[in-house]
Length: 131
Picture (tube, rainbow, N blue to C red):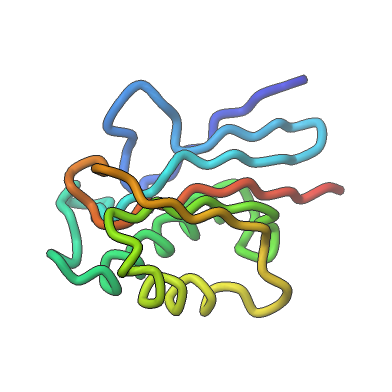
């Protein structure tokens, strides 16, 4: 197994000891770290308390990481959504669904006590691009 670290300036830099994503190069499986609504250029949170605006930025950040691995949302096979409040599910789900034109990936969604930088939403994913 060969691991390759994926990094892009178009998504927020890691704020701890982790990579934006890691690719298992033999089968081109990408494991992203959770993305929160940080602006990549400023490192500041986006959206205030507006969970829809935060979700849009999170999906933009995930898209940037996927592009850095020469993938897109069509390659996503599994996602996990972490919400500060499950009452936000419908709003986040609408933003999330808009990124998947075809069959959506498998997914889990959980409510958590707290997220980094007090974000309202965080999403990670696994993507595969064989060949």
